[in-house]
Image 1 (cartoon, rainbow, N blue to C red):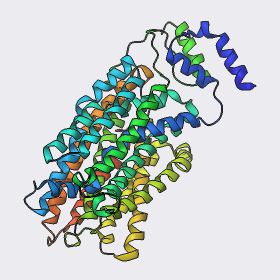
Image 2 (image 1 turned 30 degrees about the vertical axis):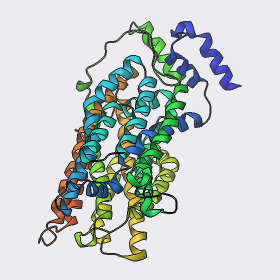
Image 3 (image 1 turned 45 degrees about the vertical axis):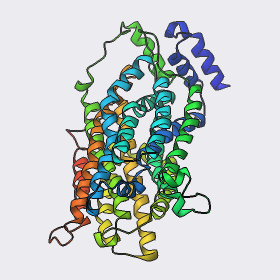
Length: 482
């Protein structure tokens, strides 16, 4: 009854509050005003859409080493990691070139068209990547996948607009959870389903399409999932206001009261600010870039390190072994983000969480070279625990930065702000795999060095990047919008 009375009160004051009957943004405001309880439907919607676009980003990493080897482009085994880094970077390079454009499109025409289009881009180009017959086809399809898919910036704006204020942290946590799980389950699928004719000869013949294209099956499965998500996305509600003035803010009834008073004070059409002069936004974006560089480099290095031979300091794992590790990490990450993170964020705030998670991440990565000295069950247990902890810490950092970025701007510029963030982040994430591949190849050639031999130098460099990120979380660099 209370929620119905609240909605009725809001409807009765529509004229005073300047609500527009056919405005999708106003309809979403009214829906949120009358909403009670946990928004399960909205959480599930965001989770599935983000998962569909996150799965292909890193699904290639467990088998990329073997794919490059099959292309016969590397002259030495130690050089395979370098070429793998180039393929891994091509997606982010493409995304860096168009993220601002897709953010502007989302602000002009709505979040929904960009989300739907981006989902179908995954279907087409991820499938083509699985059918790659040479190095350059793999580069081109990954580049176009990033170039044409501008979904992740608008979906963050969408999440900020579809949830009531008390569920904002949970909404952003849902995005980062789906993103993080996609970056883990994707490689899990890549590990389990790569080279199926060799692993499951009773099911897949070497003369079948999956025998001739050994990395197609995992790409096809992800593309089919994205196809289902893309079709379902046609029923997503739009959240963007389509009127030019007297725009109410996207939050609860109290915020709508504030919008009315602002209108009476003559602030109906305040000019948009220059986002580059918004230091709370820019500082959080710069910090986001630093941690994104670290995370993408870590993802590339972890996959290369686990499958590389023991003689080079790796774990000598198969793609199936890597898939098992990442599957366990994905389950642990899901439990952590849905049960613990919202509570921790409410108590300590995103900045404190980012600092603590960064410091703990350095400690975990320092142990990795010594984990490689283990074997058998001790190795399996230790690497699984370390992987769960590391991924939970990384996602905690990214979630906190998502919250800071969306708090720094209003709805009219949220798509553009996330576009800027995606562009900058994509540049750093493009550098990450390429740099990681080169670094890993170099490390394998200096196994007998007196200082930081072999993979020790790889994890040392990752820790330096993480330490820089932690230092930047302090004032006067990082400023939180009040």
